[in-house]
Image (tube, rainbow, N blue to C red):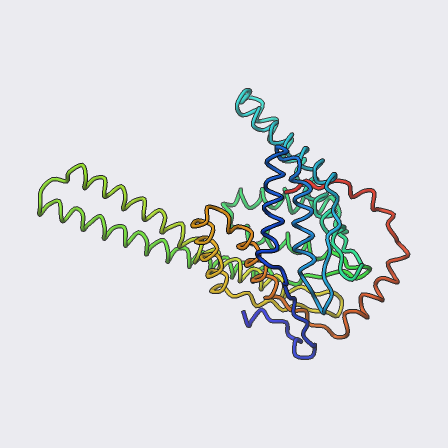
Length: 361
């Protein structure tokens, strides 16, 4: 992680992000959202999303000021109707007319990059900090490259190009994100992405070998007992089934608590430590151990409360991720935002009408 740190971080003063959300406070929003979404057969879910996004954005603060979310429920609802229509088209073709699937899949593949492009523009346009909105200036050609072209190339090469695809995706997203008139920039190198994926693959292999070894020992002990005490009974065979099920659970936990936190933390640190906004830099120090601990305790809480711990888990994870990020500023952020706001008044909201849909992907 030290190798990913911003080189000139010592010359800038630090402005850490903070998260002020409360589990009990968000629980009240979450339970109402859930009840109304069920009562309206999912229609209220668009309004629920806006309430959730606003709560998390408004409790994310930087230099004493909070972010905000301005998405409209009607736009989100239209987006979800589009997404459901496309899903119904795919499900209908596979179930009732499999021959049409060869036509439907290319059509969906051609539509989805456009939808994801619209979703990026919608999300950023409806995000603001100190009253000034973000925006996304990436073109549609770039969207088809990172959402269709590179994924196909990765698939054809047996995902050997997956790290390269990931690097191109983050570069497309960050290089075309703006705050006022200033544009973010991303300088993550391809080799750094391959390094993270290679280390993740090595860690996955170690976990897999350890699990197979333990499973082999268990089966060997069971067979040894069978030779010594006679043929296995139905009860002992059932015990083996339980052992197998237990190993599947352990394998899932090992992946979720070992491999995924490692990948997510290293990739998050790499991406943000290679991102800048004008003269401002970012420093991410997300710990894999902390991320694994929060994930594990969240899982226990959700299981033992039959899901009622979910809003608390979301708050804990948001705090873990947000508070690992620091802005390395060369000057006061409020002065920078004020200057950007003055420049931005020239463009106004002339393109606001374009942002009328959120595909909720």
